[in-house]
Image (cartoon, rainbow, N blue to C red; front, side, top):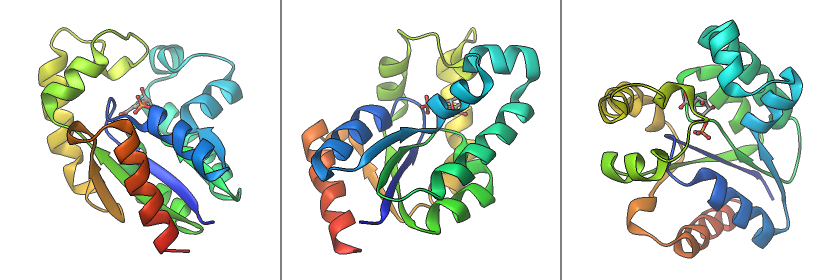
Length: 169
Ligand code: S3P
């Protein structure tokens, strides 16, 4: 099976869906955020605060290269991974890239109770979500397939991705 890479904005369900998908397809689950935190021995909030976003993006690209060299994995990619073309190229070298989407309100509802995302720890997260979504839309559109998780149950999303993945083998 080709690797399956889930990209998409924060709060679109990547972690939940990737975990279930890996289980269903008997593949290994990998999270770029977890790999970054392990490599850096600090949290993503700490990396952003102490070293800045550029530094974070460099570590993220290194982790993407590492994850892309593995086989039989479902990769749960951080929401900003798509802004660097090289990351998508690496993911595509042996995988299929699927973008999960959801509306602004759904994203706000799903993310507002958590504090581990530095980009959303701002006074007006709704505005930040809207701005970032607009800025990133052309990058997310480069994925091989897009799935709107706002309209599907987790199970339906997993079913749909399974179908897509099986069709490209
Ligand atoms: C980010 C998304 C986060 C994490 C970091 C930056 C982004 O991952 O990589 O906080 O730029 O959209 P999730 O999409 O898994 O929350």
